[in-house]
Image 1 (spheres, rainbow, N blue to C red):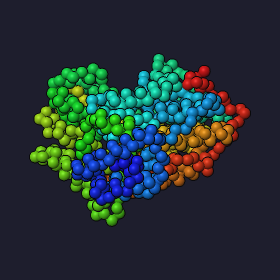
Image 2 (tube, rainbow, N blue to C red; image 1 turned 135 degrees about the vertical axis):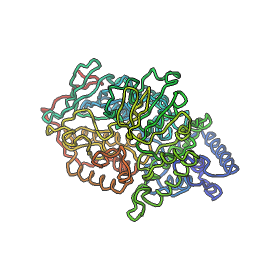
Image 3 (cartoon, helix red, strand yellow; image 1 turned 90 degrees about the vertical axis):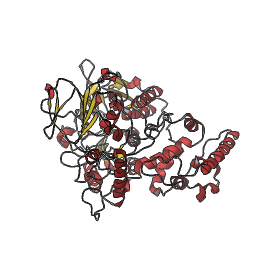
Length: 629
């Protein structure tokens, strides 16, 4: 409200110390700004007057704010100095997305296969349609949504604020501060409907292989249909949008086939277990204690006979007062009717949840602690989160010793407390601070040799996050596949998007583009779409038949990625995480701030690529109007 008031009135009196908000604590929304009630009422009443004047003037369009003004207002309303280099990205958020005009007629010079109809694939489809580029989306599932369509376990939801985990051009009046799975999936389906995306999608079609035809300057994409029937589609460009957390990882425990109860991965939750009484009286075990387990556990603890959590390593858990809180109708009314309110709210969330914490994740080489923390600020985080843990677990010293991590905060993705600590204190819940050795016909044996009898085992064991493009077989110009170049788990791509030897091939959610320090991955996807569309426009304008990243550019970029990761908490030897491959190299997450990646992907540098003009002998793609001929 204060930011909107300052924008509408320009009155400097509202920047007096009396109205100055406090700095937000950690990842807390700080909705009150730390201001006393009488000051908040004064701001609210002044905003009513300002909005009424705006209405009286006919509701004129907001003026575009320059970066200096955006920074000045953010500094004041956030209660701290936001780095100057954030101003351009923040100005884009505050001023609202600039949508390019749609093409007046289709252009068949480029035709594209998009792999996947999750958020990434749908964002790509919207921009391809706007540019008039024919394309087809190959989606293995029966509906759009990707991981959100697949992950339907109890308690599933976002750990990023709903208004930040949103497509910038498609706002929604969310019902809760942190959207739950069904609402997020409905949002994505609504996005598909609003943009008529499904007409481009071939549901039940999975891409198994793609091979570049250098002579024809095209990709031959092998697709498996709903009945297993093979098909080849030819396209000039392929965009992989298959997601990072897409293929469930099932441990190969001894005795898995012997277990006589229910056994499944969290991403493959059986529909019959949705019924309220389906787990009544059952002895349920959850293998894993990461994000999925933490959402499932509290959601089912009161529905089961007993719950046992098998935890190889504890997680750092942050408090958040808004996790289950609803967004009331008044706030949604402000989003819809007060100029700039939604945009300023998103900008503030972007600062708090995206990059604010980043500097505290850099290792201080002079810091004396070897395991518990990496710098003074990180040690302060540790003290804060440890106090919270002890407060929540109270006199349960057994749970405190099992739940307190011995590695630095943010070494793994920070989790938000959704009732996890309260669940652990329940009489029918047990925390086993050990991994699993083997399964038996009646349960499992933990890594210390103790046997546990169970009726249901839920594998919350994560995904093949370091096996980029798995299990597809992508063959480049030289005849080598990504697997032969990268091995099983060492993918490298320039900006996480483009790879030498693979012309006209773009990856969304590619290597080193996930977010380890928090924030909205949709922001990363929008950066990638912007970059890819700039590359396609260059190909179309200059009649390029092939666009291929230079090997030295890719090598230089990934050397920088590795050097930066070596300075980050994620490579700390005190723990393991899903960001690193078996050799210890960070493959999954971004080493930069989101703001840095936004800048890096803002334009395509022609010097980064080898190019070829369109050859007369090139093969004409057969992707027409979203369907292969």
